[in-house]
Length: 161
Image: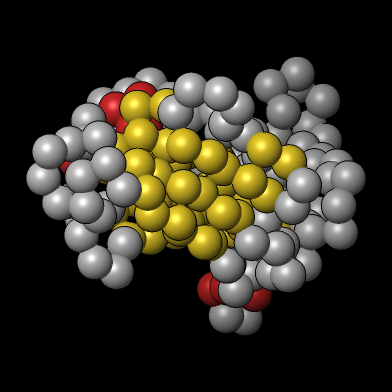
């Protein structure tokens, strides 16, 4: 039997399980000693999730004071958990708006992207799943005095059936 098919059988019906190197205990078993496999119950039709990153960048440098629209179209359903902007440019940009379908996630004052850098402790982005037919629209503003290329990304979960 191939290695992946064995793992698929082990993980079938378990759902999201984090397996760490040098961890104590056996994977997919609860700590309560019942011996029952952990069960993942989802309110959507997706059964498997895989950690992945989804990147974006502006095509040309963004002029000082100008806004750039970034549209994210994942090819598989994607659930972002963290927005990431590198710290060397994070202070030069502000997130003006973020919209998914009819929901807006930034209201009012633009957010400085320093709160989304790799040294920030923000990892609880809860905007839901971006389905294949959906588009996540984000507007960033260059707040520096020089043209800057915007680069960033998301950490999150790729969902599959």
